Amino acid sequence: MRAAIDRLELPNPAWASVDNVADLVSFGDATGWPVVLKTPRGGYDGKGVRVINSAEEAAGTEDWFQAMSPLLAEAKVEFTRELSALVARTPDGEARAWPVVHTIQVNGVCDEVIAPALDIPVEVAAAAEDAALRIAGELGVTGVLAVEMFETPGVGAGFLINELAMRPHNTGHWTQDGAVTSQFEQHLRAILNLPLGATDALAPVTVMKNFLGGGNQDLYSAFPLALASEPAAKVHCYGKSVRPGRKIGHVNLIGASTADVDSVRRRATMVANIIRDGRAAADEAPHTFEETA
Ligand SMILES: Nc1ncnc2c1ncn2[C@@H]1O[C@H](COP(=O)(O)OP(=O)(O)O)[C@@H](O)[C@H]1O
Ligand SMILES: [Mg+2]
Image: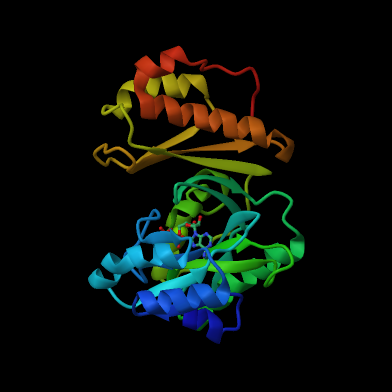
């Protein structure tokens, strides 16, 4: 993937394919520590990502090289926030981009999305959308493609590309309630080679908040409380069994003004927490807010 991005002359962090600890140390010494070590495929939710702070720490990665090689070494990027550019493309080559969004990761896992990314310079947003459309076109993608990026003012194109996900993606779940066409509808249109739908946002801001498995096994027990606490919220559950830390659903909430973003984030988080923790825990927390979306 990194080689393909270089070929397209799009902005990558410094990277190298590394076969062993010695290669990793050479890369870190050349580019500077810390370095991020990744499994080139099969990783998700931060599971295939390790931050290596020094040559001494690199010695502790022998287990990864034993299990799989080569690995991908990257410079650890100093970013202001993480972004995602979501596009869809048909086999005939029609392609459309949704507005670029701001994604917030907690422990390497997507936790929240703010759509569109607020206060992003227009030229950076346009360049990010163009990059994603070019990648989709040049790699012949059919369906939805998410391009995860680091926002890096003054470096690269104002962003560096992190990773590609060729599928409907967590950073696109906001489109279910915040865009004219959701990523799932668009994916079907694309793979069926039908005309694509409009990708405009329906509101000045949409917040998507994930909920991960926690203490509450019976998610639906908390639904009455969660839904009553925020009538504008849209709750999406995946029907998965609950395991701690597993992504099991998300809440979408739209706001009437970008100035409301803090309130929208707080209310979406409240709904997600009620479902994650269940009625008992939620009863201890305030669960009504005066503000309306
Ligand atoms: N080169 C890097 N520099 C800084 N942070 C990074 C780098 N690569 C990954 N990360 C952090 O780790 C998270 C997960 O890494 P990513 O490559 O996106 O793997 P995953 O497939 O698990 O999403 C990223 O969203 C980012 O927060
Ligand atoms: Mg990622």
